[in-house]
Amino acid sequence: MAERPRPGLQYLTPAAQLRADRLPRRLVQLFVGLSLFGASLAMMVRGALGLAPWDVLHLGVAQQVDLSLGTVVVLTSLVLLLLWIPLREMPGLGTIANAVWVGVALDLTLPVLPDTENLPVRIALMVGGVVLNGLAGALYIGAQLGPGPRDGLMTGLARRTGRSLRVVRTSIEVTVLGLGWLLGGVVGVGTLLYAAGVGPLVQLFLPYTVVRVTPRRSDRPR
Image: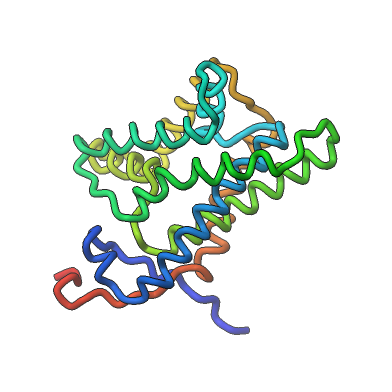
């Protein structure tokens, strides 16, 4: 049996990410991944069977203010980037693109999808949304152009507090889930499916989506 390909993710500074080779290919993959990520969120919204924790919060906020769901996603991302400053996290091009384009793609996709009470269709949208989200996450991570705003908050807090990534991520997601639920966000079986499935799905797809790059000699760890 052939050996399964291994991820080739590297730690690169924002400048090194842009100086590394295969940049055009990585930029295309980044925006394909972010577009599909926004589309996957729209699928779960239309499924109406529960959202990812952050999207429970986004929907809850959107229901309280006169803004589209995608706009709330963008504004939340920008606020999170401000929180990166005291954590001394450095955003890459992919981070900024993530903060803006996911919300845009979400708002562009929502009008195209059916708003239906048909349960089989809603289940298909929910399951398809989770699977597509895993693939989309692997695509934009594999482009090696910087983490998303929420990922950077998690890693920054873990580094500052000395806690494990698992503890920090769980704490953040439980907090935003509870706040989003109080604001009227949709919690359900889709929330549980996302929590249990998206990590393994990203891990499944990632070996096939990582763009292997060669950093410049001056950018390599010493």
